[in-house]
Length: 60
Image 1 (cartoon, helix red, strand yellow):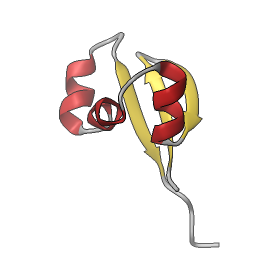
Image 2 (image 1 turned 90 degrees about the vertical axis):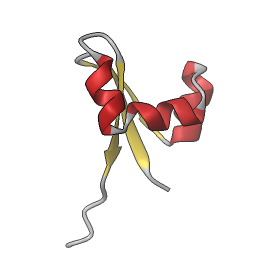
Image 3 (image 1 turned 90 degrees about the horizontal axis):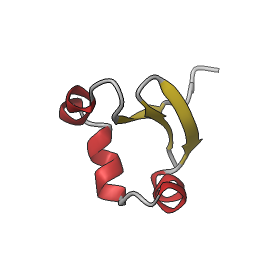
């Protein structure tokens, strides 16, 4: 499973799966996925939510 970092503006809130973040912050999974898309990030402004996918380093 992929992990995602959730931010509100510049403030880091949490790290986890989309399902985990959805339950904890009461935000629909599809909405969280939108927050990770270029359009969602662009529209977030200074205080909006942003979701960043955490990539695993498999070169080790």
